[in-house]
Figure 1: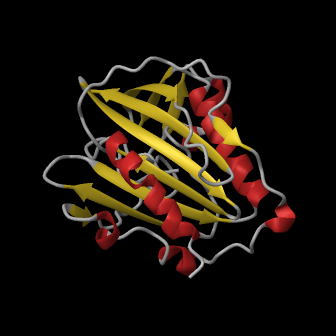
Figure 2 (figure 1 turned 90 degrees about the vertical axis):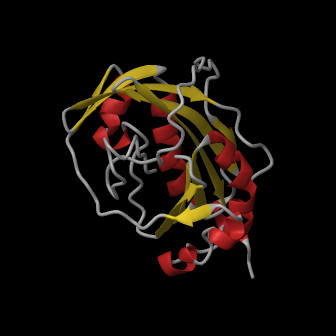
Length: 231
């Protein structure tokens, strides 16, 4: 998963932090006490289709015509790497700095796109990965469980302290085989950014939609339909 805190602090990186910047409004969140952010259960691996190539995944991403008026595609930014330290969340520390604000999935078959909406700072980003059901489920599940296992913690990235708050959200039942969802609040320099991140595994595909909560809810179903279309 990619997490971008704000464009002035962290850029998108292919191997580090993840989630797109969205609204900079400060929003209070109440930590959820649910035992897990996951719903659904892994499907029978024997029923899973073969993993798709990165080129095939590219054709299944949402584009401007799918999203409607007011959306502009963001060009992919060069990877930027910074030392990351996690304070106050041992589970994330064990996973390593890459998972501190969303983690980095290392699957070789992947595609991604990001969009801005209107004149606001709202953004929505989509990532697609393809591998075996077990590998997808284990990787994304461990990251979500670690992130939502700590209600608050701090990330030091490139010397910049970022206060983090995570909240488990009810997953979107009926979509895919497994679902995970969370609300993240990044606070630094007196400003806060709220990001919703929802992941859905459908067979050998993993879809992650991140960004402004309203935009994620608006386009999640459309993104899954296109990602899983067979024609």
